[in-house]
Amino acid sequence: MTTVRSLIFTLWLYLSMPLFAVLLSPALLMPHRAAMGVIKLWARFVLFGLRWIAGVKVEVRGLEHRPTGPALIAAKHQGMLDVIAPFAFLDDACFVMKKELMPLPFFGWFAWKTKMIAVDRAAHAKALKDMVRQTRARLAEGRQILIFPEGTRTAPGAPADYKPGVAAIYRDVDAPCWPVATNSGVHWPAHGFKRYPGTVVFEFLPPIPAGLKRAEFMKQLESRIEDASTALLPPRT
Image (cartoon, rainbow, N blue to C red; front, side, top):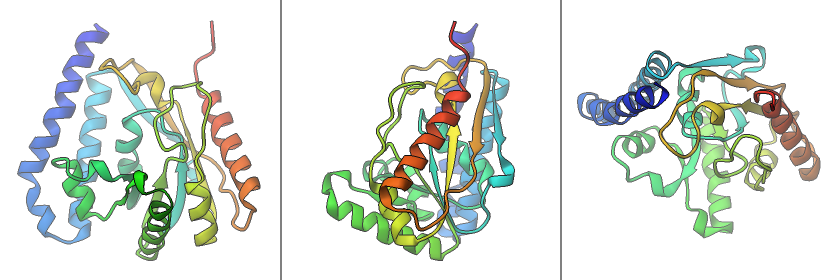
């Protein structure tokens, strides 16, 4: 049954992209708010199908810690859902993403229109400077910057490898950083098409204050996210 429901949901997900791209493409010619509204609508459409087709519910915890207005958010990254769900519960999300994704139909079009932060990871030091510059500009516009400190998806419970990009942004903007934990990879794995029924949790944690030294910031960020994400995993049998 899980296989059948997963297949149906996969069709729901991938057919939704061209459907929204065609029917709502006029939003690309409209102001930012309209284009962001399309992305939010699509995210809710996907989450609706995820729950009622695949049996996967999304729950947001720690709402008392959720930032309003411009903010730097660092989140655990375990799968594709981490890139979809935040649009449903953040006011004006702006992702730090791979530049290679920008040409993709629908996703890339709206990412360009809503000024997501595209990074050419092959450019190394230049990419880091460009990421910081773009982040500063988006924060000035009141956006909520969401970065995955590991840079790529990590399986639940796997050893973490946090990259320095988030520390460069944290130092440059001199503002707090809000960590987010998740167990999304348990129910929507990074690889394969199966979705496993249950509850995906995205948990906002208390913000890390501005002004910490790089080493202390990275230590706190990793320990908070990893400890909280591990606590969300099912007990080992």
